[in-house]
Length: 143
Image 1 (tube, helix red, strand yellow):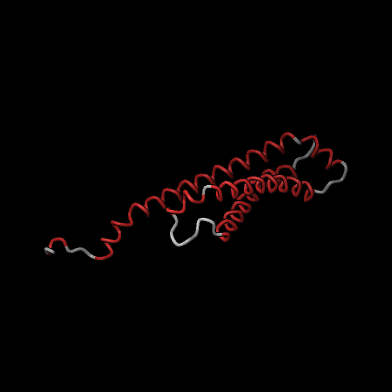
Image 2: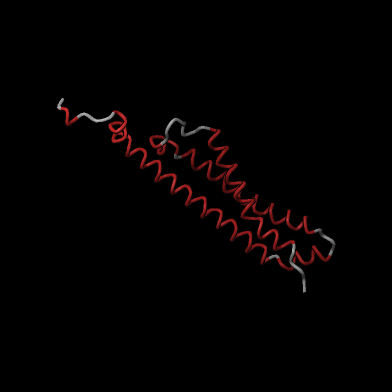
């Protein structure tokens, strides 16, 4: 081996692993984009639902419903929507787990902890997305 062909060991490994790292970063970018789209969608659906239920909310408040009860009603609608989506998402991801297994580093494609963390993150984000419509619904005054 000529002296010009000598390279540091970490640089050689980097050139071999570069496509896998690029694929992992690309999948991560798509996952973040999907999370943002899902949260935007949940916010839009919950906000639209609140706008459609204005009369119902006003009647509930006129009959003595507390603001916290109205907010809880709206938050629960967002949680139900998210649970349905997470259930379908987990079923779909288990179905296609073999396709993505070559992109994973140090984790199984069917690792239950990863699925649990994804559902937990999605639930937290859905609660955050439902908070603004819930606050608007609970502070809305009937005219």
